[in-house]
Amino acid sequence: MSALLPHPFLSAALFLMWLLLNAPPTPGNVLLALLVGLTVPAVMRALRPRPVRVRRPGLALRLLVTVLYDMLRSNIDVARIILGLHRGERRTGFVSIPLEMRTPFGLSLLSIILTATPGTLWVQYDSHTGRLLMHLLDDTDSEGWVRRVKDRYERPLMEIFS
Image 1 (tube, rainbow, N blue to C red):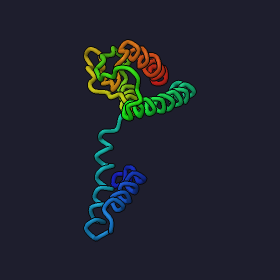
Image 2: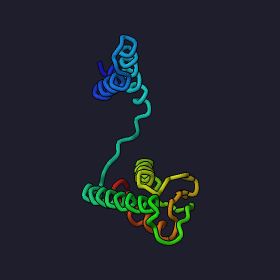
Image 3: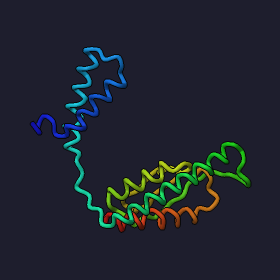
Image 4: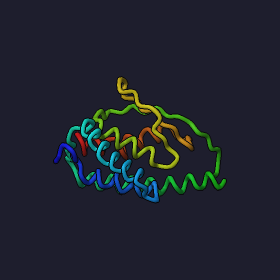
């Protein structure tokens, strides 16, 4: 049974999501939903990453609070820029950040954090040099952004997952 349904909850969720997105349910949509629900989890089994071990769950919770606070603050800053309430000169730009972290899961989470934070975007990562290229909506202090990413995000992620 596990060969046919390696992840039964994922299969059920995909089946239901397909039907909800393609309403009303017709026989063709039900058949496609069944096909998606059975094939996607089977394909995902081949992509299964190695298990991740969280070494400091308390620090992970603190990092979550930090990220949520930074997202809220960035939402306000971006809204001020869009509404024209931002004082001073605004200029977009790119900043290159040397990263020490090499774990794939940590890098994935860092990319999610930076891309989900309004005004910042993970553009490119060079695995050979460990350099991250990040786009900033308001690039007033590039060195401050380097310190912020390294101190607020990279170091905690390295402690949590290394």
